[in-house]
Image (cartoon, rainbow, N blue to C red; front, side, top):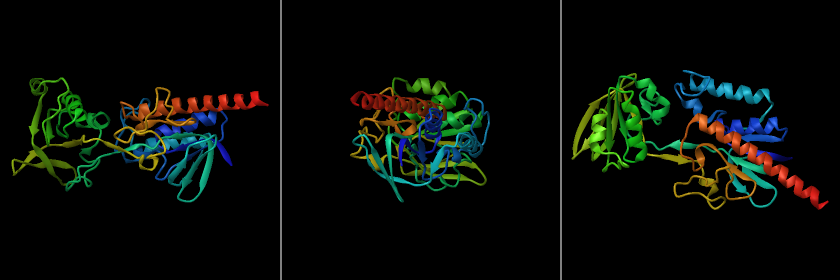
Length: 307
């Protein structure tokens, strides 16, 4: 079977793309190696997605899956490992089979980069977060720390300062302030600790402190939450040499989400977008799918004109 559209990744972007393709009466399937809903399954609580206020991440993922199943959208639980994206018919090789499609949409997602320190894994969802916009509301009136030196760390600290009683920023190097002044940060109840390296997350049932090393000395901050902002890692390692990627490994595509090969599209966290949220992933999926549908119509029209 040659699918009209094959989607790689079953998170919010991929499911959204699949729903739009299915509604357009296209033969479509989603390849997913982990679980339908992707990283949404790992979220403790979601309270910023329209219509689903304060919902458990797994419950939201179930709602996405139920919507897809209602449209009889096919899921194939295999891992895509290799790709031939040249020519009219694309080939996707998984750990079990080879699939063919006229158009491919990559919705691979991206994983946050971890600190790799003691206690981090244990307290994910219980004080450790990788998304200030997603989870900041859970720490209203509390004390938090952001770990990182780049724009995302500073932006997260500024965002959290409107919610939290106190925000610390632990930076291994001088923070890149991106036009902001240190005085501006101080006024917003933010304290920067430069030359500090996070060393251990402390707590019982939830986070109570963060230990760090500065000037060779071990120190500690009592707090309620730690936001890790040291970047994300797109799951595009198998696309090296297959598609154009930027310096960070994100799929390069235009504003219509066309990737560097004809008939190939990208959406969600693995593309070179500015905002990584469930809402933007769903929007991306809709755009990529509609563009894929247009592409198929153009290809069919070209074939008809040659007859």
